[in-house]
Image (cartoon, rainbow, N blue to C red):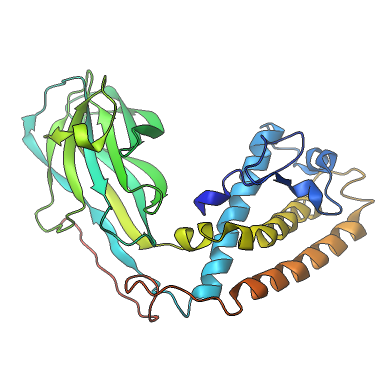
Length: 318
């Protein structure tokens, strides 16, 4: 997803105040009460959760549409694809020290047109336990993600599926709280020549900043990718893309109404209005995208935006 579009547009009386000050209700035919009326009967979450699901889906679709427009300029490849960061050493059981231990990714010397994708994390446990995994912005010390998992003896793998644009997050620390844990040491894969990642540790009582970290033996590995991204290109020109995203959001909103399984005035009496709105929104959306990319100069960084040539780099544990 495109990071600067998070909470960029809102829905009156449902979402928090949007960063742009704009609401989907600015489009004709969009009323907040309609959103409540079209949600499927099987949905048990509240209006804000339903809005978040719709909004995030639209963000992903919008990103896909922009990539399709840029494909002749963009290298559609992963710089590092499915890299397994570590392998385990079952002979070395680590002591719990009250530290965050994990992998520091430092992209201060990488292209700003990339994103780090953390696919999963894994640990080798000596027995049953509960472990908290965290992700920090190690430049500011801000916690970005936290999840607690129950582990059993042996290999435990957990899906993370988080991505971070490197123009926004130049240092990412993926770690676990080792308090009370009993994990076997893992070692950096000897064939993984990815110098931007190192094993680090820091006290859980300290600010999680890269300059305060020290080299550390760790009990966690991860699978990650470094991919080309349009995040920086769009976010530097966010106002240019604002109207197009508004119409894309309107299209998805009206599709929710069209395919809802509820029977009420919004899904029956307004069927013609819904179809008309979708057609008009799609026309305007296509027009907006065409205007954005007409004559746009795409920066050639020699890594992501250049010739359309597929290059892949893969490393796996034998």
